[in-house]
Each structure stands twice: as structure tokens, then as C-alpha cells.
Length: 231
Image (tube, rainbow, N blue to C red; front, side, top):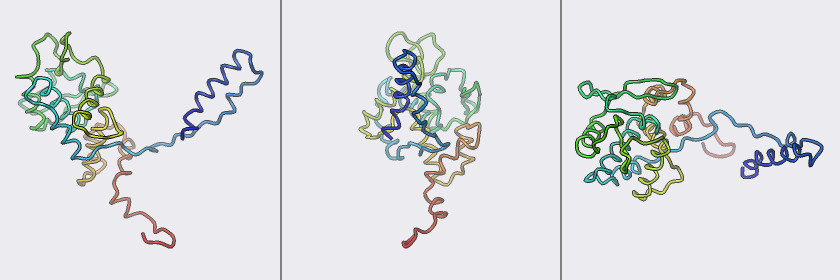
């Protein structure tokens, strides 16, 4: 795969030579493209024990720890995307009904049930950890200016720091690993792909099909016997 990953760079280099007149033929067209198959990857996820260790690493006696714990719970229990966490405002929570409004991709808006564990953590942060400021964003930066996070990159950096703090060794980084871990955990506990798709708010069912690759029990049931060996 290492050679294939260099193909775009080689193609750009050859095209540059052609445009500069160094070669008479555009050799970039001779570099083959690599097919990218739909659902070719396996979801990147962490084990439930690792997720709990990351959550436990937050110091809930401090304002930053309260914020990080509530934020990470939203990722781990509701599977929110980083950008959706950034966009949350104080007006998005209906505490009486136990609902949170999530603004997702493509300007889609959805109301999701707020688990008591998550709601308690957010309420604790809002009442005793969130700094006073004019911003209506839920999660506020620890340093001035006291505003919401600029973008999803800041959330991914927060997640990376949490993994390091919890001493969880994983090649999988960033906030999306919580989303994949939630889906994988649900599948392992018997949830259907439709149920997972509903929680993750997938627009198309095909998007959820990638999690079938980690359903080892079902995969074993349809595996063909290995010639000359056991199943």
C-alpha cells in the first residue's frame, strides 16, 4: 500500500514536468489509479473498558474536568460528531422533556433523548464549571476569549489529550472513534443495524452496513468451510 499511496504525488510531478515543457508526453496518464471500494475499511473503535478509562481520567473536581467529562459523554453515549458538539447551545436542551436538539450534517436537525448520566454531567458543568460569559454555546474554552470552540479540530485535540491522560494506547485518534465505538458496542449487545443507524442519524442505510464487518458472530455463521480444514 505504501507504493500506491505515492501514486498521486508521482502523477502530479509528471504533470508538472509536462506543463513546464520538460517532457513531450504527459506521463501522468500512465500512472494507474487505485480503486477505492465502498465500505472497504473496518470501523475504528475502542473497547468499552477503554472508553470507561478515558471518562474516568477526567478530574470532575475542576471546571475543565467537568467540561471534558460532559463533552466526552456526549461523544460516547450519543455518538455525536465533533461539529455537532461545537454547535450545541444552551437553548438546545429541553430539561423537562429530557431532550437535546442536535444540528447535524446537511443542516439536518434532530431531537435525541438525553440519558440521565449525560444530563447530570452537563448540568453539573453548567452550574459549577462553565465560566460566565455572553456566549450561548454550551462548551466554553478554558482560556480567553471565553467563547465556544472554534471548530471540530479543537474537539479532536481534546479527545487526543484525554487518550494520553488515560494512558489508552490506540492507533485510532480523534472524536469519531467514540462514534464507531458506540455503534460497535451496540452491535455486540444485540442491536440491529437499523437501530444503530437511527441513533447515529445516518441518512442512508448503506452507511450503517460497514458495522456488519465487526459482527463476528453473524460472520462466522455464514463463513464457508476452509478446504481441507475446520470451519
